[in-house]
Amino acid sequence: MITKCILYCVFCLASFIFLAQTPVQRCKYRFDNYLNFKGSLNNRVEFQKEVIFILDNKGKKIFAFNENEIDVVAKYFINNTFVAQEKFIKFKGTKRFSSTQRDSISKKIVDKRIIAKKDNALPLSGYRIAIDPGHTGTNLTDAQIEQKFLYFVQDSINHPLDTIKLFESVLTFNTAQLAQKMLEEQGAKVLMTRSQSNFNSFNLTYTQWIEKHKKRVLDSLQRKKVHTKAQHNKLMKMSDRDLFWEFFRDFDLNHRAKLMNDFDPHASLIIHYNVDEKNEPWKQTSNRNFTMAFIGGAFTSDNIDKPENMIHFLRLLLTDELNQSEKLASLTVSNFNKNLNIPIASQFDANYLKDNCLFTASPGVFSRNLNLCRLINSPLVYGESLYQDNEKECKELMKMESNYKGIKTNERVLKVAKSYYDAVFKFLKN
Ligand SMILES: [Zn+2]
Image 1 (cartoon, protein in one colour):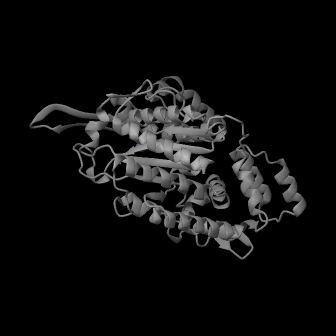
Image 2 (tube, protein in one colour; image 1 turned 45 degrees about the vertical axis):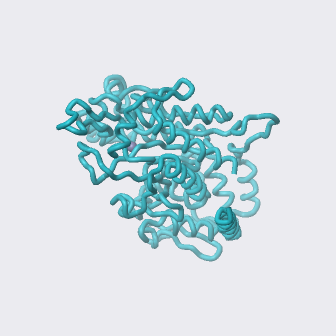
Image 3 (cartoon, helix red, strand yellow; image 1 turned 180 degrees about the vertical axis):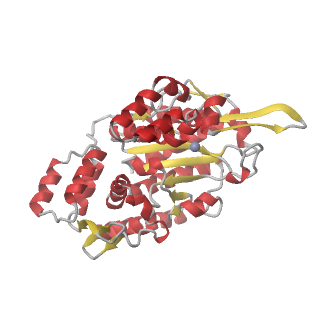
């Protein structure tokens, strides 16, 4: 109890110190702790006492944010679409807003996340949660293209007929359905990016998309000059597998982010199940198992040379979304650890953690510049609860013996869903 009180006091003190900082200092904290991947952005962002300058790759100042502008720009980012943000930032450039301009911008912003309090309402009434169950393939043809499945005989000598067959898309969808049910029971509104375990965010399978939409979509992108004629021809001639990796994967992820952002969520869950990277090509089980979660950040100088990414970078620098994401992700990882009894990963437990991520102050929470971590305009957690290829997990995950209010599942997936639900509940209610 005493330890709990001390920990709580330390947390309150840390929050107090953070709030006591000036807006520039708070941005500097986010830059140092989440965004600046191994010093890569040292020459792209200049912090002075009362102003932040953003520089292009030749050292020219392209944006300036003064102390008294940061809050209003952040509020604009949180409550507007990407297209509006892009226009606003171009207009802003390095000029300084007058106090009249700041007031007039502030008055026009509609805060879409305000919750009207009602008597006798359910605890999460008025809150919106967006959920993305990762991946799509649930048959060997689609899953082989996406490469997100496990299919092997665990013990070919003693049990040659006992095969391990797991599709990550089925696990993530099942988890999302359970979390949705739990959240809706408390009054929350939930958006799911796909409606069936074998569907992508366009609500069909990849094979169906190829048949019905490939030509129309690629033709339209050429007409809009997103692709040149040569690029269009190359994509049209590609095998389905190459097209998935060259084009469709990002096309689908961008669409998932758009669906989530249009919903103006108070929190977003991106659900994945991990594998042991040292066990590639995953034709046997592993005795390792770790739990972890990702949030946005870890930008390199090359990343922000792309104009679109610069906008996302500025949003993450100026708003407090990364601080909020760290809180939500930390609650989630701690629940995975407690409820599933899986150790929390440190940066030395996987190469991608050491090489591609920044570790945050919260154990098991890493900043990583993944598409959805960058594109989603809300606090988020990108959860990797467990290793599917772990010798014990793979057998438990294949079971379908449990039932949660009409949804068939197993004990492990149910615990993962409950961990997400409890984390979101605590995050929103605190
Ligand atoms: Zn995944």
